[in-house]
Image (cartoon, rainbow, N blue to C red; front, side):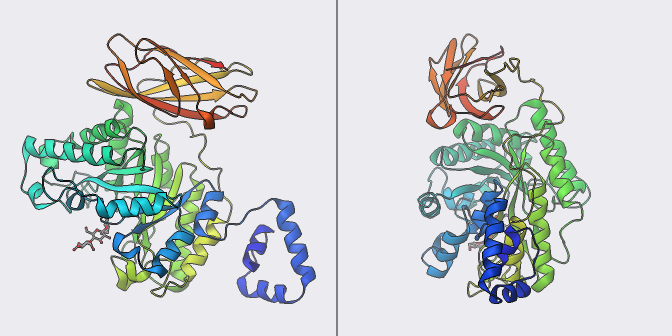
Amino acid sequence: MDNMLARASGRPVPRRRSRVALASGMVGLAVAATVAVASGANAGTTLATAAAEKGRYFGAAVAAHKLSDSTYAGILNREFNSVTPENEMKIDATEPQQGQFTFGNADRIVEHARSRGMSVRGHTLAWHSQQPGWMQNMSGSALRQAMLNHVTQVATYYRGKIHSWDVVNEAFADGGTGARRDSNLQRTGNDWIEAAFRAARAADPTAKLCYNDYNTDGQNAKSNAVYAMVQDFKARGVPIDCVGFQSHFNSASPVPSDYQANLQRFANLGVDVQITELDIEGSGQTQADNYGRVVRACLAVSRCTGITVWGIRDTDSWRASGTPLLFDGSGNKKSAYTATLDALNGGSTPPPTTPPPTTPPPTTPPPTTPPPSGGCSAAVSLNSWNGGFVATVRVTAGSAPIDGWAVALTLPGGATITNTWSARATGTTGAVTFRNVDYNGRLAAGVTTEFGFQGTGTGPTGTPTCTVS
Ligand code: G2I
């Protein structure tokens, strides 16, 4: 409370001094409270609420078998609004025998999260590690087919329930080569990554699709190689929406000095960036300072949409001896927790409602109608592959607020819409009109909302028209 008031009033008062101030009388408290209200500042008192104030999520990696531990679940439910199954969605867990899918443990986490309004990061659909035995023994086109089937089955099963999927994990080699990591998946052909992304998009067009890796947190040969891949995917319309930076740090692998700049350069490619597996070995002030730096870097990048720590208590960590997390083994908040919360409650760039312009421009420049005053405009961007497409449509209100919108466009012959989200479509072929749904019809002047649709055949190429309804 004392720190919250200090923060809300814009005064960085050290914890001990503010306690003294608080004890010195009710007058000081009343003044501070008045300042907090007058300034309109809302300091979050948990990681989730503080991050939400900044338009971000704050998540934790979760193990299904720990959900029955009341200390663990208590912290999870109080502090976090996003979860990542730590192991339960990996290939060996979800397809232990070829063609036999088991989702029990993953479902427990998804249910726990969704019933409490938390979002879920899916981890991970295609990875060289934690493959079941049958997959480890496969190669060539049989493996490629099995991998694509796995991606399709798992993403379809969880369709509509996943905020972001780590579609492909850790596909680049360490060291200075910038090469792909050798693996059975890589040996099926260099295009295995884009094939996995296309299969994921077709299976769940609502999830953001991420590439996730470690040792890519600063600019180096490995992150340069990932950067080149993302740039290439954006240029060729391969459906990628986000890049995950695992951010496992310790003294041998510290938070890089160009961490924020590296996040920003990826964001400038037109993808969201997410900190996906944060943990920082250490203790005390040094650890706390490093957590603060990471959080501030994310808040400074408008497309850094959320942070996930890789576990809850130090004892839950995959490297518990390094005490790398925000809560100690008894569930007490560490100074790293306070530094994280304080950083979340500090200043930041606005939340990522309107993504910054992307470089380079997409190969299919979104056709736009000129922004009419008081009307609306629409722009389509397409992710296409042989035989199908996903269209994302951005609808922007003109110079006046609107209460509803309708976007009309024409599909080429042979194209059929199979699925629409965040809009209602009339028709599935030829001339189609999309109208807003309940929650996205009302837009303030200049504000943008998105809807999308998926189809077979070729996507629309003409200019959409937007009318206010
Ligand atoms: O290694 C840290 C992370 C690096 N990035 C990808 C993440 O998926 C990875 O997470 C870790 C989990 O935290 C560990 O919990 O991935 C490890 C496996 O690669 C996980 O370890 C495994 C053990 O290897 C298994 O023996 C064990 O059965 O955890 C399993 C469940 O406890």
